[in-house]
Length: 259
Image (tube, rainbow, N blue to C red; front, side, top):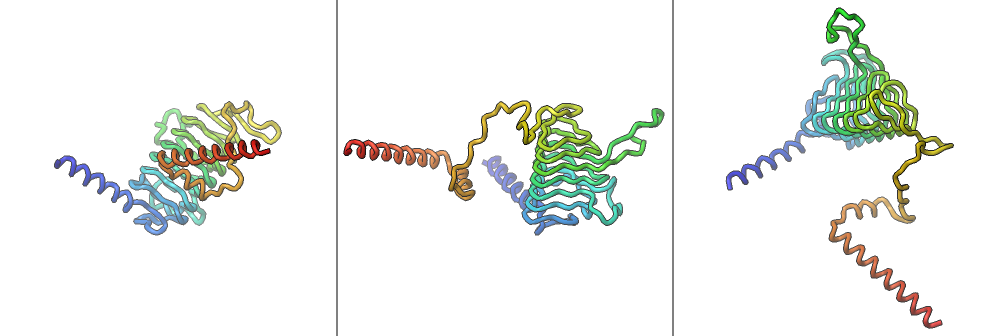
């Protein structure tokens, strides 16, 4: 009994801490971002965050637990007037990811990152073979990720990378250089394995079935309501649809018989 009560207290307390510790535009806590849009939420517990004055977060972003967001090589640096890390609206960054901006990093709107993604604009250099790599001055280059991209679990985006619009990065891929719009890249180093163009469509062709179009007249509110139905409620809807279909067939048969 005591163990059950203790478990309930711990879980209730943790849920309360997750709610109270989340960072939003209305409840920034100790973090003072250059900008944080409405609807954006950094889950609790947060990872390492510093240089937030040079970090701008768009609206309705979702930042998972233990995500690192840093601007500059270390805290308390003056990075000038321009932001160093910019997230567009609707960006999602999965838990345990790291975004390290020693040079500017820009992530376009509605880009989704799975857990454990690593995005950096700086990297170690190893020019001097006689000096430990960790003691050599790092090299930096801006990173740009276009809107609508998807970065799979464990993907790594290296300094100087430029991803176009709606790019898919496979899990575990290591990306450097430029990636064109509507491309799928995989591997280490990443290479293009599929691409879409207006002239040829997807090449190689997709093996998945085409998406089912939304019926005319169906509103987003109706779709959200359908998604919230329980299995029992969905079964009831299906039964009602079947009854209507049977009634329609019966009515059609009666009309045919009366001719």
